[in-house]
Image 1 (tube, rainbow, N blue to C red):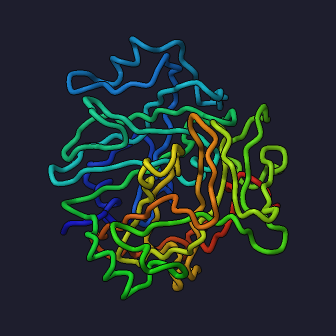
Image 2: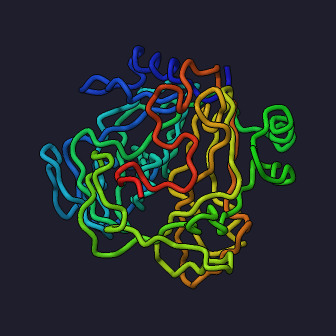
Length: 362
């Protein structure tokens, strides 16, 4: 059946050998509609990012571009502004009817860690063609903070799909009418996906609208939750009456959508950047929204989308309610037997403006 594979179907791929690893999967590695990917034991610092192209293996290109190797078994610091390649513990032998795509995990994006999955003979990032057989690698480039990673750290996630999965314009509109994809917001924002706008008013108490990252901070251990003081890494941004924010070039911001969104159990969603013609800024790094995100039966009645924003080239003025991203929905191949936020310890269910799980509560 066409659709995004559920956790049960991903586990069946593991049982059949289509997904293999030297180490058994961890208990929480399979999510409702995706698989967390684990770092292997060696990181290669490389001179540049690359795509291998149809004639090359990734390992061959690493050999020609590597500067040095880093052992991750005891943990190692990856410096900001550098590019690293790590072979992942998982490798694939996909059936001919199954393809895959990857995205950073939510916490990865909120730390401004740029990651992309590549595989042998790839022509593009984060896309694994149907029937692919071989290793998969993760490109890692911390953009704001130096990070501590180790063998088994999870920075990226992968979805598996069969056949056409994306909803049409009419199907998005019909689904919103029947299951309310926007819990608050304008129904006219639903068409080729669900358009999201920015909240720059704040919550009315302290006027907090977002965070801007600080430079020259300490290292962030990606595997430790709730260990860091947010003010050591972030500058809070408050609304001082203008409902506007000027993005400084190459600064990193955590902002939040004005609307709350809902992903029904039979669907998954992915955030994609809005039309680049509206502004020179990047809207997100992490884009997967699992079935049950913002679903009332899974502990949320609509959840805001946290947005990782970076301006390019020139300062850019954002105003409250300005459209900034788009959430596209896809069919699940079957209803998952577990939903986001439903007893899974999901970090961002029923969220509003929220930093990554690594930071203590403000």
